Amino acid sequence: MLRLEQLKDYQSTDCVNIIKTVQKLSLTSSINRNVRSLTSNVHLNTIQLLQVKQKQTETKNELIEAREKLKNVSYMDNSNELLQIFTNVTDISMQLALIDVEIKLLE
Image (tube, rainbow, N blue to C red; front, side, top):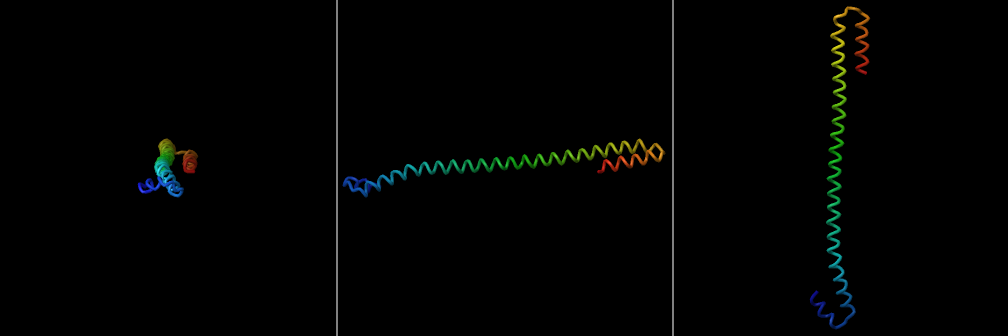
């Protein structure tokens, strides 16, 4: 670059064009570095955001599964209570009703 500056004094158009090109490159290279840095930061932020969304989705699915299990447990608890009530009754129709209730709960 220093040698080019010395040649500039001779007013050679080639030397002047080369110097202008080198100066432009040095200016744009810092801009390019900043843009690349910004792009990589945006890319990293996007990846982090997707990871958080994935964890939220997994957590949501786990909560839905847990809620379904709780529903099933509460149905089972209710059927156990019904079983205790109907076991004291010897009426066949009541026992059949209990079986129907249990079948519906299992569906």
